Length: 353
Image (tube, rainbow, N blue to C red; front, side, top):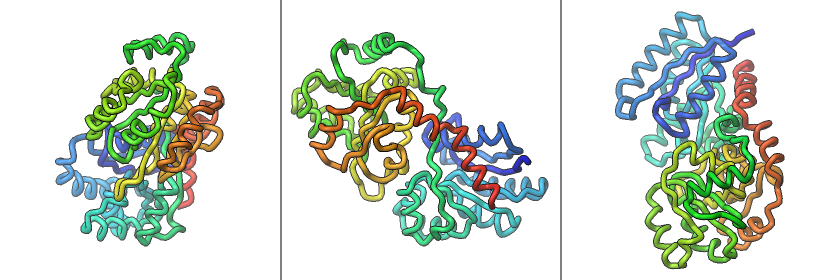
């Protein structure tokens, strides 16, 4: 029997970002199988002022009109709407918590959002780290279940030969990669990503056969540039800046190892680590810091390996000894994190509400 469910999201395409991709893909998968309604904001956050009351009244109208009993909120900020809708409609309310939407440190936020989340029926956390943050804020462990983020393999995988992929990657980088082992990091260059640390502490200890590609922009960009100059390694580390989706996919498919050297920054958590599964869907194994939500994105010994935060020798050893086969990495990642599988887990939760 089909479910009938209402989704509410304040992050939706054509806006671009992790929460937007999450909301779009979750709703899209339910639309393919269930009776689905949605209330979404596809404009900038300045429009939240009118969207929140709009979502509340429209949610009440849709729920009552269709005699629905299931509502899902796509992030923690929407929890107060869920509490009000639950009170006035009697619907069962579930919510996905990603990380920063529960840890955001403003006092007023912390006084309201966790309390509202605790009054909902089911809290779906994208990682065990996020679940722990919820429990720390008084949300019952019985309410919290972990379901990871998902991805669509067809959006990232390029079925080309290694030679063709390397040729395309050489065009992106602008240098020959013959005889090189290519390490890559993809993402916004903020302190918690640990890229500056990796460039400063690990790259100088690897031999010159290793090339490191950094795709992304952010406040750490100039600091990383300065580190490259200090160590005289501009011929081994390439700051690519923002890349297109096509260039990102070339990096995923043609590189040898994905590097996620995250470090702990207070109140700025890595809720999951979506890049690990995007790259993994292309067969790219990951070496990542063993912290926060990254642990849920890496299947130890199957899709990559975890190294203790700040462990220079650990990163060097795992990099030099990486032996996972790309076809095996891709198979494991796709069997666990494909949105088709993630949808089934969400549905199981909602059936039991």
